[in-house]
Length: 429
Ligand code: AFD
Ligand code: MN
Ligand code: MN
Image (cartoon, rainbow, N blue to C red):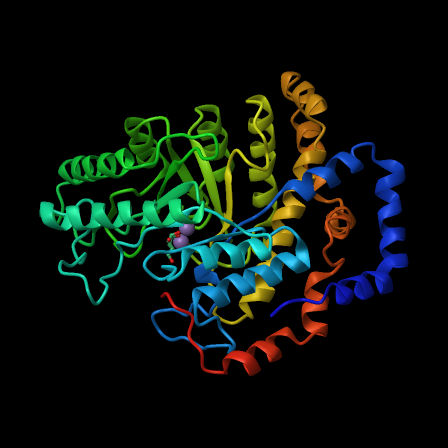
């Protein structure tokens, strides 16, 4: 579904006075307001193709209707999000769910929405119907070299699909591990996985004027294996990435830690070591819940961005382009597109707040062991309402002041159900 730009213009016109009055505090009082707006305009958050339909759990799945039935429809959905918020300018594909039939046509379609192709994702956590060997006991770690080779070949095929589309990163998330003590030789599993990853790494395209490929090694503490995960924490991911070479990085998915992990500290250290590759944003109460970013622990999201901004600036990095920014979510009870609009906004809010932290004063407070003042400096920013800045960035980029309200006003979901049907199932999980 294509959005008529006039709808956005009318929507913004109607809200113009109220927006201006909320923005005036920032424009008049805060020196950095203009800087923050510009940074927000540049900042894009990729949408994963698998988050556009209903996720469900192993107990059930309650489809919301109008889900995208093809890669083309997934691109259209992300195009719609991007038209509304001008901040979702990339899509991340999962192979084999999203293999393009006609690469040129897919590139053309994405381009017409202003979308780029973010990291491509391999899938060795499921068995496909045409697959000769099973991943039941792992893929890159498997005891049988033939299974490992099948998984290596798949990853290389994913890189080739990514190359054809203009993507510049491969994300490897492995479900490999073990469910019971004694099942796996940890040392051998690590060595086999490393050897397999080396073969995939060697197949990354060489650097060129237009592309610098990266490999992201994503970790996860538990599930689907419940005793050990072969890439289970940032330490093991960092080890793999370090041994692989300069193109390999750790990818942090916010839901992949054990409860109460200090993710902001993990991020600070990875950045300091030059090994942080990117993010999968979501939120969780218990584990890999894949809930809307910022919906459970917004302060943590802000503290993570506080470390990101601090670390990226310390290394002279470009906030918008030097790390991979992506949402990784699953929607059980919400409209996926509404949820994704909420997630993008939550991420932008946390980023804007982090940009506003007075870093000179914070360092002074730290050097003076002024704990109270350090805490005040962070909480003062966190408790300020930066939504007018985020809305202004959207407006200037051609988006809607309130994307969610416009999405509802236009009855987008009803149109999608009429167009695609009430019982559609998005390809994927
Ligand atoms: C998993 C991981 C990983 C993977 C995805 C598959 O977060 O990003 O690609 O979900 O749906 O939990
Ligand atoms: Mn993830
Ligand atoms: Mn996950």
